[in-house]
Image (cartoon, rainbow, N blue to C red; front, side):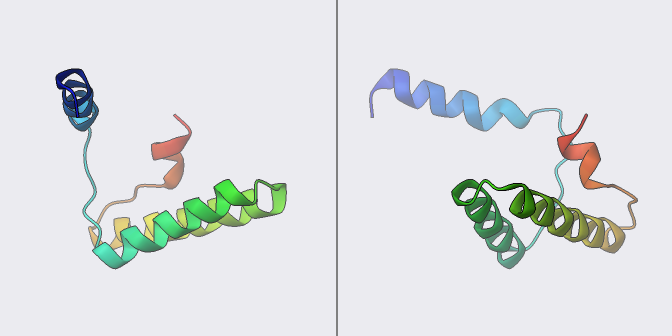
Length: 78
């Protein structure tokens, strides 16, 4: 990896500065990643709607566990 590439990676890693980060388990992160992969592979309206509903449920469950009333729309549809 060149110096320019490593600098780009550092900038990408720092791009979340100032953002409230939600803590999720590794299992939850892997499940979300798999759902996003499915979405990318099957870009149909039915899959999109199903994925958004599933992600919203997952994020709301996490938010409830953390005593927060955060919805997926706050993350994706600002």
